[in-house]
Every structure is written in C-alpha cells, then in structure tokens.
Image (cartoon, rainbow over all chains, first blue to last red):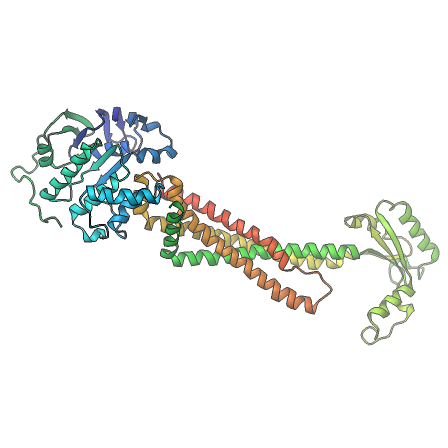
Length: 245
Length: 303
C-alpha cells in the first residue's frame, strides 16, 4: 500500500538529510507505528506520503502510484485516498462538528445526498452522535480529536495517517482514540501513526518502525516502543495535568 | 453543491474583507473612468473629423486690393493670373484636387451677409471689402502640403490655407487630454492591481486554515482558488460597472443635456458610445483581476 524505496529527503542543499536511504513497505490493512525522537524524520515520512514534498532520491509509492513523479494537478486525487489526523486537531473553529466533517466532502464536490448520508454515519462511528451541533470549543480534547478523525475518514480513504494524534491528550482519552483507530484499521484501512507515546505502542503490540536521524534503525512486527533516551533518568512520563478537557 | 459552496465562500470572503473590497471597487472605478474618458475623447475626435473634414476645403485666397504680400505687388489678382492658377490646378494637381469652386467677391459677400446680417462688429461691409478665392476639394485631405507647395508664391495668390489647420489646436488639446487621462488611468490601474493583490492575499491568509484542510482532503486547485479569484473579479467588475455608470451620467448630463443645447452645431458622443466602451471596461477589469489574483494565489495557496 505504501512503499519507500531507498528514499532520501534533503530540504536545503548541504543540510543534514531529514531522511536517508529509507526503505519501508506497508501492506494493505496494516497498522504501523512510526516512532523516534523529535527531528528523527517522522513528519517528513508522512509528508512524502501526502506529497507535500517530493523525495530528493528514491521512490515513494502510495496505492500503486509513484508519488514523486505525480504531476501537480493529480495530487488532489491522491489525497482523496488519504485521511490525515494531527496532534492539534485542526478543526475549523467557526463551524460545528457536523459542518467540519461535511466540509471535507463538500470541497471535493460530493453531492448533498452523499454528505447527508455519510456525515451522521461517521459521527456515529467515532462516538459523536448527538454532538453534531457543538462547536469545537464546546468539546473536550478527546472529542475534538474524534471529530478530526471523522473528518479524515468520512471519504473512506484507504490509508489513514496520524501525526501524534494523542500528543495533546491524557492517557485515558488516548486509549479511547487508539481503540477508535484500531476499529478503523479493522475495517481494512491502512493506518500509519507517528507517535512519542511509549505506553500506547507497548500496549498495542503492532508493527513498529523506528527512525533516528532520518535512518530506519528498527522495523519489527508487534514491537515495543524501545529504549527511551535517558535524558532525565528516573523522571519517567511527566504527570498529565488535564483530564479529558 | 459545488456552486452553492463556492458562492458561500465568496460571500463570506467579501464580507470579511469589506474595507479592502470597497477600496478595490473605488480604485478600479476611478481608473476605469479615466480609461473610458480617454476612449470617449478619441471617439469625439473621430466624430469631429468625420463631420468637419468633409466640409472643409483648401482655400486659395486671391490677391485683394492693397495686399502687402510680395506676390500681390500688381494689385488685385487679374483674370489672367486666376486662369494661370486654374491651369496649374488642372494639370499639375489633377491627381490631388477633386473639384474647384470659385468664390467671387459677390459670393463671399452673400455668405457674409447671411452669417452677419447686422454687419460684423457693428460695421457694415461692402462687396469690395470681400476677398475672392478658389476653393479646392482634395481627393485625400492629408495631401494639403503638396497642394500648398505648388500654389504658394504664384502671382495673384495671396495665401493658401488648409481649413483643417483651424481645428488642429482643438484636436491637439483633445489628444493631450486623452494622453493625460491615459497616464492617470495607468497609475490608477497599477494601484488597482496592487490593491487587488493585497486584498486577495489578506483573504487567503485569513482563510489559511480552511485552504490547508481543503488541500489535505484533496480539493482541486481550482476549487481552492476559485473563491479568491471570484472575490477579486467581483470587486473589480463592480468598479467597472460604476465607471460605466459614471461615464453614462457624465455624457447624459454634461454633453447631451448641456453642451448639445449650448453649442449645437457639433456632433457629440452620446450614451450609445458609452455603451460601446463599457463592455471593454468590464473586460479590462476582469483581466486586471485575473492577472493579479493568479500571481498572488500561486504564492499563497500552493498545493
């Protein structure tokens, strides 16, 4: 479904490459964790799949297409097969939950009947039934992320990319989000999730691809998060301040 | 769905940016008014030339009594001299001159009396005060110089005058006015282009979150950019319509209702001419908006 073949990405000439000779193959229906420290290349990895950037060397194939060679006007078509979720949700603050999800369908020209059918269905699936008319500010962090996930999958993409989707959430809420991503994965959607959250990775026991300084240092099926770099030994995970709010 | 969505976005954008949109409308209005005024001035010049060039002729004034011109040393032009001049016209200038009319002193006096029945500035002139002349109708009025060269300086000819020359200062003034209008229009159009660019940029930045999400869920380039394009186009075209209306009012009240009443022997531009010019103003506004927005959008809403 997603294949990186000896991919390198250099943003500015002469700078250290963000990705270096990365080869990864993700099968249809897989659930893959992308782990590594900040700056290890996780976001670059995702942005190459989205064709926000082109690889400097090597090839990226997404759903059978060579993304690096895709001409600009075909990019929208590629992105319609991808769903994306971010750490900061990126909901439109002046639109309700329903409108936020419907927006994703409207802007790709889906007819009204499709919007009317698909949006309530997906909101039901992510557990936001009954909260259609809420504004994003009236939702908890977990609910906002659910709305963002609903927006990402409402067009039934083959691939869901998640860039630290639990980064702003407390452990309990994060677990709920993970259950949701798992259930989406169970419907056959390939999920690639970049994360720092070792607890989640350790608990889920899915495939783990670890990047370090732009190089794949580990790729195991049903792996664990791995050794945390012991910058502050003994402190462990910082206490979570907020509840699900 | 698509149309409704785009229309909604355009409306929202126009409302959010009201001050800038008003500025764009005003600037395009003023600039295109100058463009239109320039066009109407040229139309007016064309009308005057059509009207007057057909009426005017080259006058070959024959020596009157007491003329100080060297060619008139022998006093009033004799019949032989006149015949010699006519002979030259019939032979050397056969290709240039279409028709020749002789205006005798009697003819001139008749015309004078018709025009000034009460005498000129209080003095009643007589037939002897008039000057005889030959009136030449040129095949091509532009060839006055040739005719003038051949006839000037011949015995019995006091002066060769192209009546068109009388209008030259007027046309020159109108042409300068056109240039002035064009220059001002150019400056204003530049300002309009810059304003449209800024407006669209502001609009694009204020809606960056929306466009970002549109890009990510796979909205096409056109779909992302169309609302901004239309925003600029609507503002500019509104300006053009105002310009058209302004010109129409100016022509209607200043030219048709006022000038035409006070100076009625001239053909003036009318509302019909404004209607001919107006579509070009609208097209110009559209082109202006399209160029400015495409340049901006490629920088601010990239895929």
